[in-house]
Amino acid sequence: MTIVDLAKIASAIFAGVSVLVAIFIYRKNSEREYFANIRRKFVRYRSLVSEANEIFQEIGLVEVGAKISEKLRLLCPSDYSTNQIQEFFYDEENADFIRQAIYLGLGESSTVHRAKKIARELDQLNSELVEPFPITKVTLGILTAYFTAMTDTLSSGELIDNIFETVREKKEEYEPHSEDELLHPDLVFRQMAIYITLFHVDFANEHGEKMLCQVERILNIITHNYELKSDGALRKLRKLEKKKLPEYKETADTISEGKKVLFEYLKFYKSDLDSEDWDDLVESKTLLESAFPVDTEDA
Image (cartoon, rainbow, N blue to C red):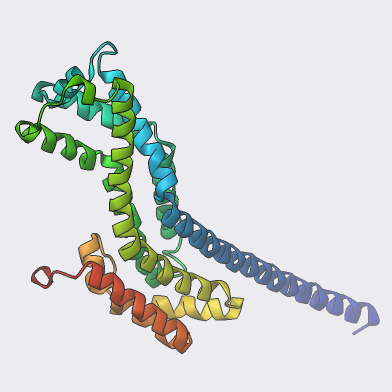
């Protein structure tokens, strides 16, 4: 074998090694970017959940009340006196028009629009976790369903429509007032906006304190734990979640179903969390259950 032959063999070996090294580097870089993207998703998830917990604060609900009141004002003839306005809203024949005005106001509310957009983005982020972390996908889906349910309730218009329906049913109980005791017609609608706002605030505060705060607390513990993992640790967790998935219920299509299986999913994280985070997680889960107990008859 000549020197030329040896050189050709060495060159071929070097070329082969170079290809293997290039493939290794490419795969390493691809994996690094893949897990970096996963971390960004968890960061975004936490940011959206934080915003979700704040969006139904009073300042946002003032805007909702103002939008509904504005549409109700346009519905009522502008030359009506205060007594005529009252009679207009008492009249059962106007119920469909009032309901439509409520829906139109909600449809123009930036608060409602933002809440729905957050719900959609959370759902999209959640669906993107199916392949890498299927157990975490279901866990986060169970938790964010609470915010989605609250958004659906506040944006449906049913709460406010029920108020008007109750007033119509009980109109005979209201004492008539003299003109001197009545508000100016424009102030009637401002007062209506305040009342709608306060009604929504009471509803949001009750559920926000009992539900969304605990949901956010649990979500933060889980997502932050994943954000801090190295690529190698995330790779192991990905394999573990896929291996363990058959042991879990794969879906929880309703909040009721989610409440029943939530703790089983949360126990997956116990060995990976420090004792303080695990205690906080269990505490929040308990507070969430005490606010909305599972109906054992449906189990």
